[in-house]
Length: 412
Image (tube, rainbow, N blue to C red; front, side, top):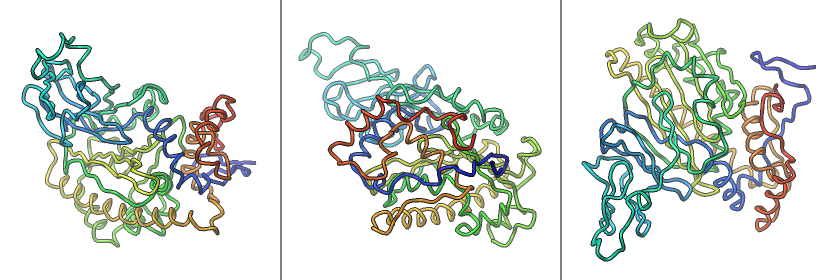
């Protein structure tokens, strides 16, 4: 017999255990996560409005990889490894900027065109003839979806972004995110936890009523989560008619103009789209944003994101966007503290693992996706660190973990 939570069938006997505690503190597992989870899945670098003109660029340094996204003179946005073909130096050092006509390596002065081809080496007579394409910057897979720039360091792991996001494309299309522009720029901060603890907190709204007073005021009981299916999840909430106890919420609801550009059922909604393994695209009536996390070590995580606004926003939209930012800022600080408390508990001998609520299937299905990529995560007892890779490869070769799909989800 199944129960239904927000129209999702939850089997009575579904597995309530999450990932084992050892997996949040294992250096050997982290290396496998970088290889099998991060490098071969799509990552958001930014938005097309972050590189509006020829020579504008963004960089992303994560998991030992360096990406460079640059708009060419032909208007095309391309992605490359930020790695000079001479000695491996960064071609550009800053997170964001503009190169007028070319990319010049700061180490020896090799020059690359904005399309990645080699223009010339410094002191070219000291080298044999260099093919301009063969010695150009090494390209990365890039896809632009709804204005967001996705890259992939290694092919495989997920279908094209357009296919991946197809189930939510019709809902997000009215927001016209591709036409938005930056509001505050790309932000980063670090937090002293394993990356999975950040995602565990963000993947469920069961804690909202207790831990997020502003969100609870705004949403009331309207918030619900949907599980990860084929790499995408969704969380949805509309404004609580009795909202207004908190200053930011009260003024947000008072100031926010009617979002006539949206269908009526979205005009008072906040929606979060989870992208496996580590990102979220969120939309409100006045803005859109992405945020993500990347492991720096087993116990430190880089948080990164940006908020985008309508180019022609009114003063009321700008004020509402600022108040929404205040609500988000407080929520993020609260989530960081929750992730610290949860993550540190796993070092205790008393920690016996998770026991998940029917409302936490976002956590469970995210963990299912991780187990599909890394079947070693199904082991309750930590393997020897030196055996982690070979054991995982053996389990993968036996195909003990089926691919994640609606049929294999415990909530299907």
